[in-house]
Image (cartoon, rainbow, N blue to C red):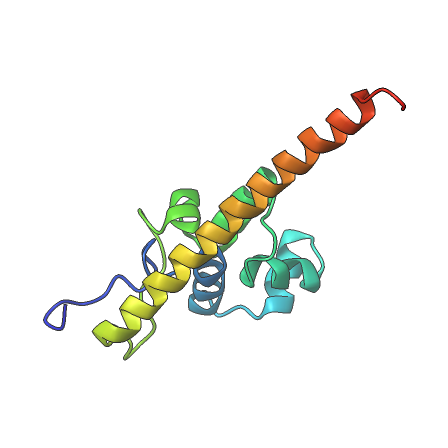
Length: 133
């Protein structure tokens, strides 16, 4: 990997929030400016950039237009999107491995949180259906 340039915003090295922040910076917009352009609070945009929450489809479409990137690129890192930050095209292979591992951990945590929510829902349903003793 040392002879190749790293896909800075690809699915193995970046999250949705990373791509939003990168595209915003490439467009020369502050967080406040992008939030205003999208009609959302700055805290909402911060949640998206920090991967705490995700925008609804209409805001995602608006964001892609404002940032001049494709929706697919925002979601997956593939397609038309922002270029890597200046001077940062080369990333040490060990750092790429760390980013990849963090991405895997985050995905596993998200999957486990969804699994726990489904189990909790089934448990609540079962408790409601349980006959009183």
